[in-house]
Length: 326
Image (cartoon, rainbow, N blue to C red; front, side, top):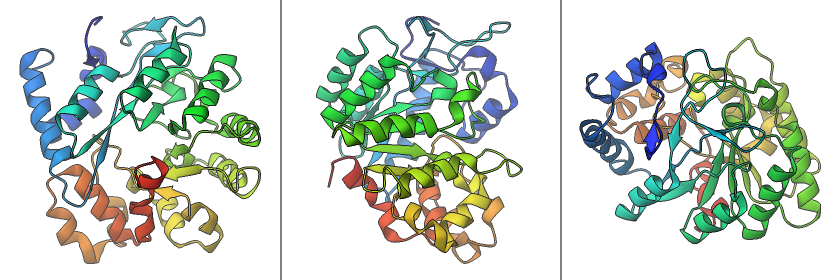
């Protein structure tokens, strides 16, 4: 689908998870591409991103295409092809939406470090007002050992451009590089840059938690070790987005005394358009269920779930300082 400002691969649109999300979003199954789908999607964004009174601002994320080691971008995943993009949202589209709704939306860019002219693109999104750069290495292919990745992270630090990087489990997009689920190599790179005074503020999405309850928490422990060790005074954070699907870890983050170091680094995120649910934490939020269920916006509902879980109020305001807004 070359030339599109955003796409979900057609092969993904036929999968049960996409059909479920699309039905919950109220999208017409007959509208796969074109103006009809665009109009429906605009209505969805308005409802869920703009009509969430408890949230001051929402970071709208772009998502760059998959890039091979040689820097070649690959379009949507196709049947029989092992590599490709699970999702694409251009920086220009995300920036345009944010410019149209400046009172609520903040531009979250996505620039692949292997892209030709990646550092120039980083400079461009910085000048365009991006508040962070989003990466999902397991789906996009970003090796911290690659000199292009290091150069990008270093320049991000020089620009004070925050990075939002997903480590740990992933179930929404295709896991094409399972070896890149581990945050340890990136944390080591950040520690080296921190010593040199050029580490960017970095948020580890989902706190590097595993996707399934039977998986161990090795990646979370790596994050904790960094926060207690070489990066204890560094601008390293973790978000709690969609952790109601990882309830064992969500409850630990709220309650366990030995995770106090992590709690001081947590920021709120919604992971929209992942569907928020109270099913796995229904006992913990039972006193707030009525207010939670009254929210029509999924972003607002995510906020109310996490508030009902008992997180300190600072978790819901910390992003402002991390992103340089406060």
